[in-house]
Image (cartoon, rainbow, N blue to C red; front, side, top):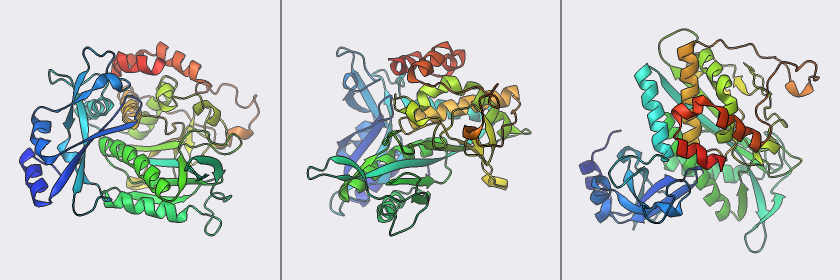
Length: 402
């Protein structure tokens, strides 16, 4: 729904809203926020709310020219459901602007919006859904993680073995209160490991939802006396946490899904730094169904891109290499640009091996390229990529390289 400034002003008064939370992310996708009173809303829309960019990674390099401004996206308004009726709060996602009103170069939400605009100009629309994996650990008397999983259940085990069921249910209810659409939830392969999946949405909504999801999971876990861990490899000998990204594309032309996938495979080496930005990311890749080889296939979960068995509007691609260290705004933008490149160039999709790649011999895998095997190698691929330089601001690339 499209809102005007006057629409929101009327709503704030009628609903007795007393707090407005303005949210944004740093360059790595970490949620940041500040709260203002309703009396400041008009100023926020017309001029922005000032913040100190020098204190936030990626947004300011010095203390001299550090003033930046949060500009709320009016269409992103939502109520914070855990606030009492007295003292209602609403939340807006924001763009980050410079003092002259231009968008900040490292505003990752704006980077994604630019990618969406480019796709629309070419006649294509992209849709995203996410699958988040996370571990739940017991806490000690100080509320700190013990690294002891809350259960020893396995993939899709049920209660009583699965002790995360009630926590997942509470998370899903809070997500629905925020207008989000969780699609499914279940116990994952590792002990204490869980997964919650989301329905398809526009790229911007899907990325906003990803940021909100992580906040809700942390909040609900803490209220239940548990510690949540989204990191790629919380337990060295158990399955890692992935952020599987499902995407589809609509537009004119034949085989555009296959061309989109081919574009993603073409550029995935360069994009890996942004999909897997930490050292622990590379301890996850290549084991427990986390991909290593640059390949695509129908149904096969050992491939980097899986094409699930589905028909009609449910046909999509699942990119399985990213983890939740990725900034979803940047990750989605990269996938859009790579997919567009594949579509425009009509890149052919090479047939993937319909076998478990982890069980094949080195001889059988000869000729299959791999994604970078370390953070350093991922950085080197990003440095060499002319594709990245045409779509992502140099400042953003440099922050990830550092």
